[in-house]
Image (cartoon, rainbow, N blue to C red; front, side):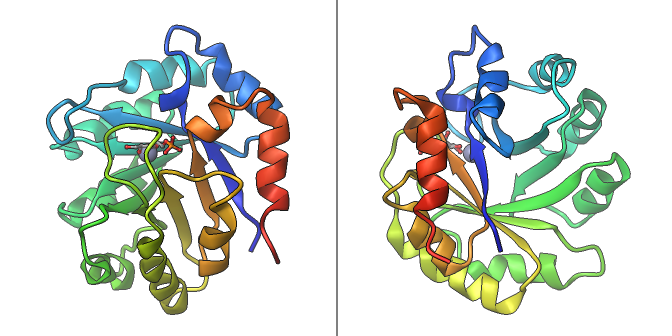
Length: 214
Ligand code: DX5
Ligand code: ZN
């Protein structure tokens, strides 16, 4: 399974959304958008208005990671704004998955480092399953934290259970950690500070692709 690289716009200059286009020109597959409400996590970022503005300029897959207390309230506005994926933290009802699909987005569920893998199994085995599981490899809140390798046990267990599922990893990914994640079975790679902090993001993205042993 080839990997998709998703630069996290949390590491971008929020006053310059054209950095999104720049990342796509650098070879990014997806754009990862961290939506934080200042309540579910102690940080406040962006919401549907920014997704809507970006959507006017790009057809790219907007991979939205919702770190919010009431994700259900965000389904309608995010769908209207043009989000592609709607990935929510696991402590939420199944009804949410049906709603996300009805608004034309792909549902995904997120596991914080401390949340056991078993909690997502009902959402994978259900008749309305999630299409992606995001395994956090840092505590959600800021970019630039250190990758937690122990999370690869979760990725391996998930890949064993489901071959076709998108498995995304988020936090501390770069050329030195991507292969650990990809060989465990992750196929969607979020990268914030490593890509945005590189003198040449295009070279860094291509180095990340080359660092995956297949
Ligand atoms: C953290 C966010 C990440 C973050 C990753 O809460 O979910 O998407 O931007 O940044 P790096 O790659 O710098 O760890
Ligand atoms: Zn994220």
